[in-house]
Image (tube, rainbow, N blue to C red; front, side, top):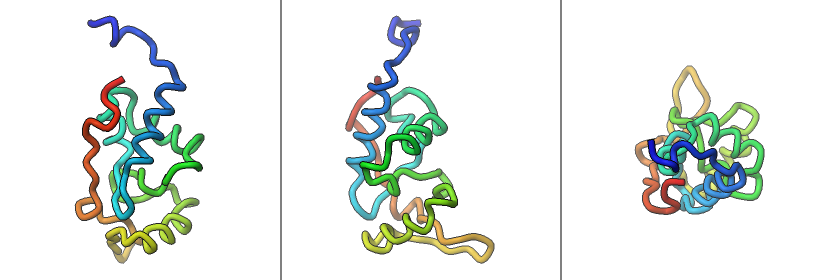
Length: 116
């Protein structure tokens, strides 16, 4: 293993990197928690979700969502307002609330921050 893989990541650096990606997602587009983690080559969807839940209020948090196109239930109403305002492509299923159409709204994170 390389020294980089063995070293613990500074939590503040990880938080800033996650938030930087959230800020770069353009209106009307989204990325999944897993996409953010993959772009950073650190952590996973849960770690990114925790960062967004704890520190994401100052960034467009509604643009970083679950891979199924949803956010936690308590955020869905507020997020929907943002999605409608930004023209984010949405899907509706009979058995669930409206969700983001992940294919149509996809934003590819590449080279924006780089691996940590």
